[in-house]
Image 1 (tube, rainbow, N blue to C red):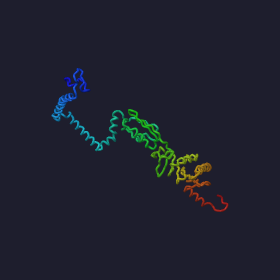
Image 2: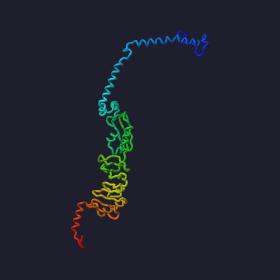
Image 3: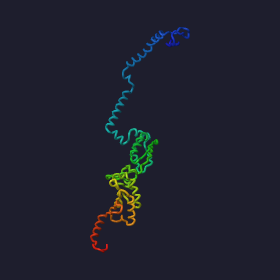
Image 4: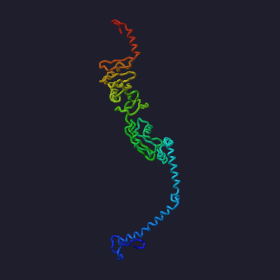
Length: 324
């Protein structure tokens, strides 16, 4: 062992000669050497620990620890009171979430929203459905959630939402094509070609669409549109179609009901078109034309016309050879 307490020889095997030819220390000498060094290693550590324990407590605690602890405590209490009092909810309602506020201050507020594929919906409806407003930020906008919210709109069939940093949101959507209006129990809905309800009638943007009325009328929209086409020049005058008892259609013209048969409705309409072309039957004082009988046309007069006809029938002279 040298003067520094270090072994200069190998510790591999006892009894092997050292580099100077002297016998290497055995296991017993090694243990004895470590035992002799142990007090010198431990004693300074114990003295250092005793010295710290002997110091006053204010010297052992880091400086400003008490001030920091008090500040954190007051901050926690303040935040808890702010939330419990409802002021935080009002803050969020007026300014957005704290994270969005900070993002906007950093220049990542939503300043522009580009919407493509918009047709029937209004821009404000798309933004409201996506949950985007003046309080939103590009950083913390959840595009997956915004996309799902837009897909929940019946009129939207597919949509994508993406961010364009620092302050733009891009929405690409595909709207379902409205085909007709469906009235049931006094309520009017917008339906697609397959009869699926895709929107509610809230304003006049759908006013030009065909109107079907009654239970299951939405499911028979294809048949109704085929009848309108079969009506030819009269088709433009048809205002609505009522599906009666789940069996047949009654077409609503300008104040005149056209009652169609359960089968052969297109052929019955062809007869009416010819009759109107030849005698202008729909221009007369009638309120209904019944085409359900294949060999005749039955008309129903208005009350005034029926009263006039009844009066004229009373005045007709009875007898043979009388001109009428």
